[in-house]
Amino acid sequence: MADITPLLADRWSPHAFDKTHVISEDQVQLLLEAARWAPSAMNRQPWSFVVGVRDDDAFARLRPAIEGFSDWALDASAIILGAYQDAGSEPDYALYDLGQSMAHLTVQAEALGLHVRQFATFDRPMAGRAFNIAAPWEPIIMAAVGLPAPGQKPEGRARKPLSELTAWQ
Image 1 (cartoon, rainbow, N blue to C red):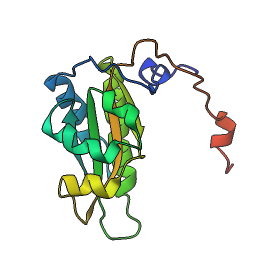
Image 2 (image 1 turned 60 degrees about the vertical axis):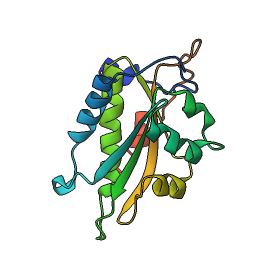
Image 3 (image 1 turned 30 degrees about the vertical axis):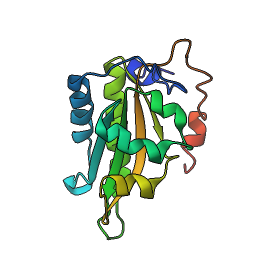
């Protein structure tokens, strides 16, 4: 992987989480702080998050939107729901900006020794209703955060060759 930072080279997304791990409030705040500092078009910062830490009210309210879709995520220490605010103009970079904020959050998690698996397989309308998220806001992504379950390890982190990422030369 050339000489990219180990925070990226060693990052991987677990398929199962350690259901005994407890994330600290300080760790949650650092994840959100990293997301806050992501770049955004015209500095709009069109993202917002719901953070559910296992066994709290927000986690319980997120649970029904996850069950039957991504049950593995329910063992994570925290679930973070990311929503973006549609600017209603073309082009609207808000969705891209939300992605950048989640990427920053993911790298910060790696720096803290945590792992993140982002997922979009959940009932978005149900998640929105659980927290009164309404237009122009839209829930779009979730991230499970915690430690991998015992025995979990990275599996086949293959990526396209760099030559396929530079198609228009």
